[in-house]
Image 1 (cartoon, rainbow, N blue to C red):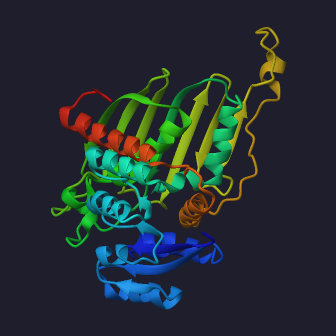
Image 2 (image 1 turned 180 degrees about the horizontal axis):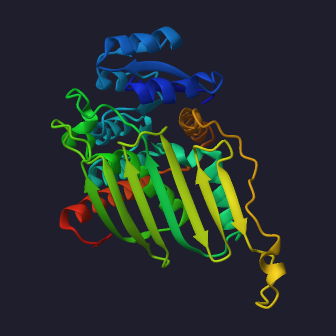
Image 3 (image 1 turned 90 degrees about the vertical axis):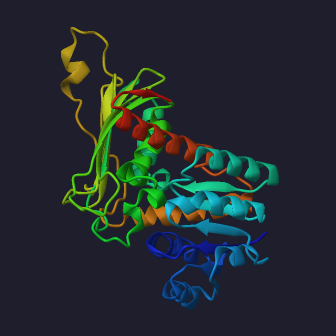
Length: 353
């Protein structure tokens, strides 16, 4: 295969402004040949820009023999059923997070992809942000010693929770509020940076006063990791600030901070290579200070650029027969953490995984 023919299922904000431009940047590797959405104008927009064939239903798109792979950007409750249908139709699949809302569906999709030799990737764009990649390499190199404590925040203003047509405020379609929609990113990062989670304790609230919203808009909590480290998380969709993420990693020999509202989003403090002699104060701490590794970063464009990179990675995985960096198993684990966080909030206590 010289070029991947992609079918885009869902032409909303994620599909149109996040994923679609990524394929358009690599015309020698990928081409969007089909698109479907319940909104005819959204389909027409993609058709005009790419020459793709428009479909009224995803099943019609899956029946198109020209389509090699599908990109699924739908309301959360449709992810599982459409992923399974696409894999059963013999298509490689990339799907927006959350992977599914049901762990049994996740297992079915993982098994289907494995049995048919198809690529299955969850579109976790956090994996394709340079600041996180550099931070992970610094952590793995021992720059901050053993990781003992992590803290993460994701938040900003979100869609109008008073709009009854907004599917994100309905539990049946969204699967939850800021934990399932936003916190799932942090849960993926926690596993990537720290390791497997042992237990979670979460508290949620609906700070907004919308009578039609069914989901939480703020959440905080703690995690215990299997390696003994601890974590704190906070998610909000009611804060008046640009949408952002923060990650702080505290180790026995230093710290790494990532802040996406800063043009230099990554800073590192490390006492590695300093004397272990407690009496030698200067060589241990005297010239140690925060450093800012050079990382190109746009405070307004980091989300969409990482989405373009993730779909381009998906294409390379198909063309070169590589394992995606974010697998179905990764997607399932992140969903499991979300579900356990909701269970904890409902029970009012820490729950094990």
